[in-house]
Length: 172
Figure 1 (tube, rainbow, N blue to C red):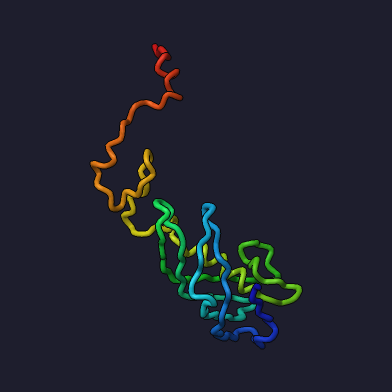
Figure 2: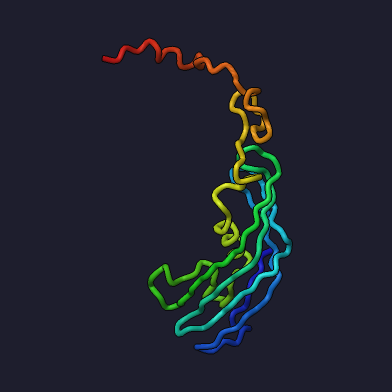
């Protein structure tokens, strides 16, 4: 269920601003075909809203923890971050950069749930790892290389037979 804010209910005149502390439910994320849970649920978020001439300006902040499989070795991973996102919506602007996809100008509402979800994804690191030096899995046997003895992974590195025809090529 998405959290929406009725912007008219904020009662902001031009030049006014307000701060709201809200609970927002964030659904699990799917990244790289894996599901990641977001904690806490619901998250306590702070929304700053102001009314400059011609529209709204918003700032959304909340702490976030993401839990799920490591993207290298599939062991449990947890990443903590702070979300700090800003949006501007000027209803009369022709420039798309000044229009927020989260504001419905016809109903004068802010889709806070969808914005918080998108902001959470953008705040995450490129890879969710169990630890910064995660070595991943052995390409031959699939065992985790994080705590393995390197001598246990001296596998035969013969040529893959599917590439054998390339050896017959004569390059001049």
